[in-house]
Amino acid sequence: MTETLPLEVTCQQVHKKLNNGDKILLLDCREQNEYELVKLEQATLLPMSEIQQRVDELQPHHGQEMIVHCHHGGRSLQVAMWLRQQGYPMAQSMAGGIDQWAVEIDHSLPRY
Image (cartoon, one colour):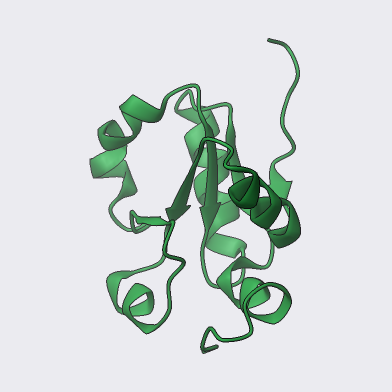
């Protein structure tokens, strides 16, 4: 497969994939305290501060679409780029993060 996925996807695109039942790993790279404030139920927490030590946990998802999110999209973009360098070409960042998700998708989520 030579096609390259875009590095960033929108909240709307992620929402559509989840609603369609697409097999994706939604990865939350925020810290535990942020995750406790607000989270997406489908997401797996793997903080950016721990990802280098815990990257092996992602091995079962190798070759699977992986969408990383954070608060506003900055950290997740860094993590997605790093994951691609580690051999995960399907890693993408959710632009705007969980804050954008709260604005566009789920207005019941608290914003911080």
